[in-house]
Length: 354
Image (cartoon, rainbow, N blue to C red; front, side, top):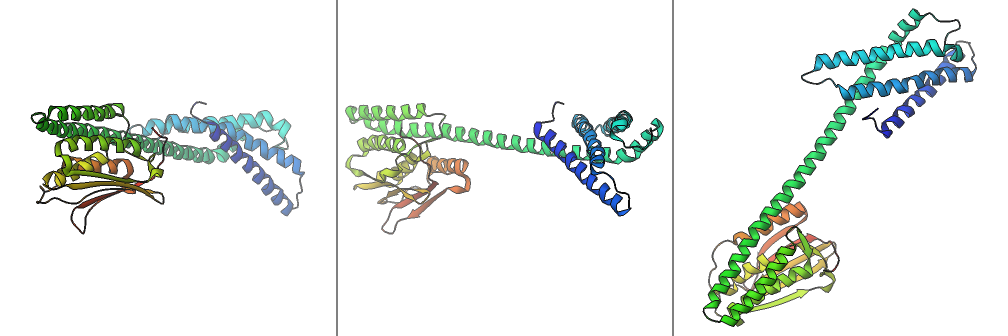
């Protein structure tokens, strides 16, 4: 029957097989207590055949319940259909007893059809209704599991959609800032502006190549950061000093695409760009057990920066939450000697070199 899987069939066969053995033991025990010894082979045959007759009946009732379960909107029709299915089982077992009794020996003399049918009603009506109840429990469990699967799939799609929206927001934000820097330079140094465009092209190529990829290697992410730093160094000159302290063992660790660049951009915009003297931005990465620890640090501005960290940091927070939920953290910590540290902690996941 369609809708009844192999595990269900095996469970039904095992259940009624076990019942047949239990019934056999009970009958033998009762007859022994009453002083009516019986050959165990005869009792085993009668009880196992009786149990075996329940296997197709159970599958039939489970199938009917799955097709027309009792639920809001069709309670009357479903109840009538399932009672009819139970009636079919009662008649089926009565007919089976009449046909098999000469071989099995349930009755000492040839049984009468009316008596067998009435006995089947008394013995099998309640059992049939119980099986229908079990069938409903199975139907509701399958529906619940399907709703959970659909909810998980919907959540995954919503998360992916949000990540795509965040990436779509981040790319124009970065592009606007980069083009603004180039626009400032083109009136003063055409060659420098040309070099900035070359670096911007490399950044856009990286962005386009990984549009649908949320994760990339730390090695590639650092390459993006260095392209950005080269653009800003053309504009800011010696005022922008860049250092990186990265453990080579984590270069292939997976990180969100374009995660470090907005953090570095914040440091450049809110610290170094506001200085008249050289300022430093440092990026560090290291392993701490099963965690990847990332840090972007600057040595502060000479004048108070504008409040807030803008789209870049907000976007990074949102993407980290989507990708890692509570398994990540992003903290902004003021440095004792001035400046700011942005510390990111992620689960360490290694990938192949790219």
